[in-house]
Image (tube, rainbow, N blue to C red; front, side, top):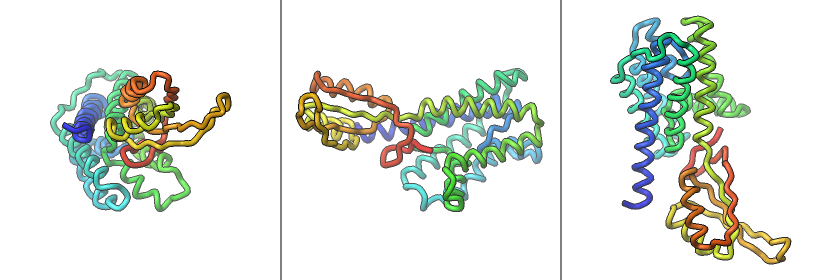
Length: 278
């Protein structure tokens, strides 16, 4: 199995696991506790209370038209992965029984639910995908409000859904829902960072070949001068996942044990192979 095939297999495995974790958080915590934290599943919790419509049905039916409208805003691969994520999330919502595991402990529900949702979303995002929902809706709304950051539009849309939950379920539940949103964002952001690597080595050509063919990642050579030695140096720059960064350092040191390597968090990465950004 090639590296590309392994990467695809790992991506879909991460999406499956991530959507299952999100569905567990919804069915075992949010839905029984009437906690609305945004997203189409939050809309589903409100509509189930008002009209008895199942959460999984609302999530699926609201997403379907968005995928048709979003075709010109995203690549085919991204939309296909997101469609898979949306379907697996809806199926998981349909099969997992709705049972409370926090026994009316709202603080525990907010922390545990945020951890489940944050971990699940983080896995989905790391796989270069999304579950549709308000993320996809905000992408469609962004051209109407180009002066606003996409993250702010997502926050406003989710905020409207949380307010709707407050009107239906009360202020106390809404306040704990906000705590859950905070926990979710912290867990998700902690998982989404990619790594940017700067490599200074006399074996830059050999290391570049390793990055290009062993890891199938792009690499850019920058020109630099060592101010102490006065020698011209090539500085290799590349962006990799957190897991790849560990392996890449090992390969670099095997190629040149004197190589100077800098590894830092990349909070926003937009481009082929990545979808980490605001």
